[in-house]
Length: 150
Image: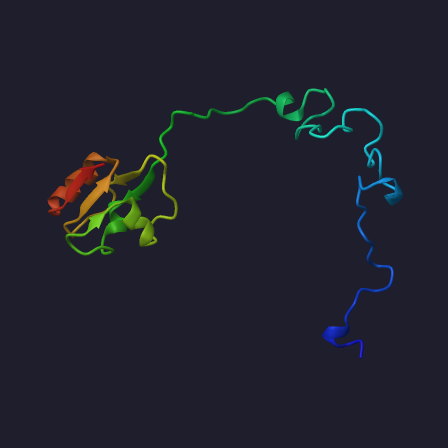
């Protein structure tokens, strides 16, 4: 009978009720509720921040900084013309939203779309982007499309 799902239960002694601290003297964890008396961790809202090493210089401050991170760098979603070739019919409007919906780009850069000129374009597309390279805008125009800067 014990092999049925309705009759399954944990082995004897394997489970234990959790200790409810701060619930009165009779519970065995009343008064200071396991926090000791006074001290830094005794009051509510206290506790050390992540990486705190008791006043010793923390590891993230001891290690040397390396490299350079440009905080003014632009975050564009970059796409080449060869990626657009054959994916859209002539006269279609191509922008970052339509590329994302079509599954061509996975993430949208916070500064918009940048179109690069690698590959050829045959369909006349209206492409809306934040930036175009010179070769990309020339190839779009030669195909009969328009490159609109948004």
